[in-house]
Amino acid sequence: MPKVLILGAGGIGGYFGGRLVEAGKDVTFLVRPKRQHILAEHGLRIESPAGNVTEQVNTVTDEELSVQIAQGKVYDYVFLTAKAYDLESAINSIRPAMGKNTVLIPALNGMAHIDRLNNEFDHNNVMAGSVIIQSTLTADGVVLHLNDDAFGVFGPQQGGEDQRAALFASLFDKAKGVDVRAVPNAMQRMWDKWVRLATLAGMTCLMRANVGEINRAPGGQEAMMDFLNKNSQIAKAAGFPLHEGASNNIGIFSKIPILWQPHPCCAILKEATRQKVITFWAIY
Image 1 (cartoon, helix red, strand yellow):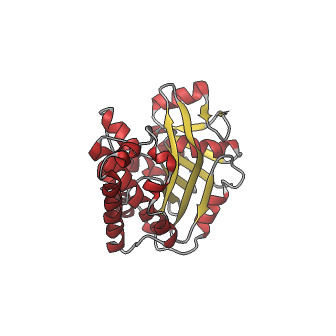
Image 2 (spheres, helix red, strand yellow; image 1 turned 120 degrees about the vertical axis):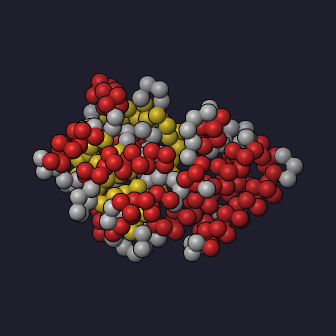
Image 3 (cartoon, rainbow, N blue to C red; image 1 turned 90 degrees about the vertical axis):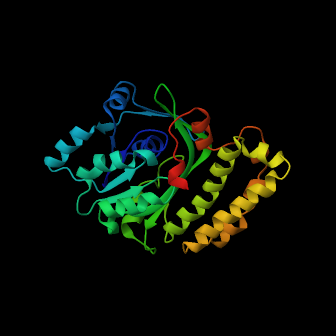
């Protein structure tokens, strides 16, 4: 059975990794000592529309990982779920686990991390990909899944089929509440997500308002669509024009009723209004 190391046990790593553990897969979480203590005492707790779960999980700290590797432990996959502003420390943390054939599966927003990871590790072992999920880690250490879905797509940067990506995706076949797929156009999928995320995050942070408030303001819907079109032009200039499916959804911000409600906004706006460290530079 493939051995998976997941950096982080928060909203993304905790959810996807927890579902793997629930499905009986070989998973270890690389975490800080404080999080390790919480997991040891209470287990990994997930609250989700797809079903709540509490699992006892394997964990290591940076120091313990180095000892593991020195003793011959080999990980087949490293699932990188750090925030963009923690990328450098995350690289230092996972470096001991990145063996000659270890595959790195990053799940960060934006595009810049791909070049950074390619510079640090064998680019043939660094997959492209992204996840779509609304989740957070509560103050008492519970992974809270806020929407009905958890979706991930991964594949080689150069495109095409890849057995390693397919094997990673297959680990989730019997996992509850997740849909993970190996795709031949993972970089395209990343750019498609970037266009939508940059638009949503950019407009809501600029206006300090959620999508519903922006759309209801005079000229708000037009401004949203104009920004969306500009971002799609950037993707096209980079060689990744929105594919047909994404192009058909170009009006997402004006056509999905929930986005007109008072509450929907992006995580970056929430971070900004709470004066927390934000990840804007990874998206723009």
